[in-house]
Amino acid sequence: MHGVDVRISLSENARIPQYATEYSAGADLFALLEEAVVLQPLCRALIPTGVRIALPPGYEAQVRPRSGLALRYGITCLNAPGTIDSDYRGEIKVLLINLGDSAFTIQNGDRIAQLVVAPIARAHFSVSERLDETLRGAGGFGSTGR
Image (cartoon, rainbow, N blue to C red; front, side, top):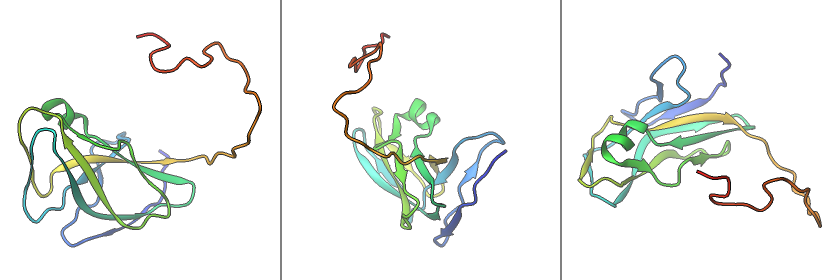
C-alpha cells in the first residue's frame, strides 16, 4: 500500500495517531486532557491531541468525525473536514459538538476523530467570459434528485 512519510511531534503523554485496521483510511486521534470534558447537548469544545505534524508539500491532512461517536452519541466535528495545510506546525485540536440529547464525557485518551492524509492539487484560476455548457447547468442543492 502506498504511504507518505509524515513527521510528528508529541506533547508529553500524547498518543501517536493509529490506524484501527490494515486498510483504514483515517488514523484515530486521541484526546489529551488533564481532566475530563463534559459536552452538554448543542455545546462545542476544542479538544487538544498533543500532536503536531509536518506534511510534505502537496499533501493535506483532514480531521474527520468518527462514525461510531456520531451514531451512538451524536458527537461530531464542526468544520468537518478540518483541513491541516502542509505549512501548519501547531497542535492538532478537534472541534467537537454534541448534537445528541444528553451530556457526553470526553476522557483523556478517548478516540475523538480521524486524521486522513491526502494529496492535493492546486488550481490555476483563470477568468473566462463563458463556461462550457453541461446537462446539469446551474442546478444546485437537490437538483439531481434524492
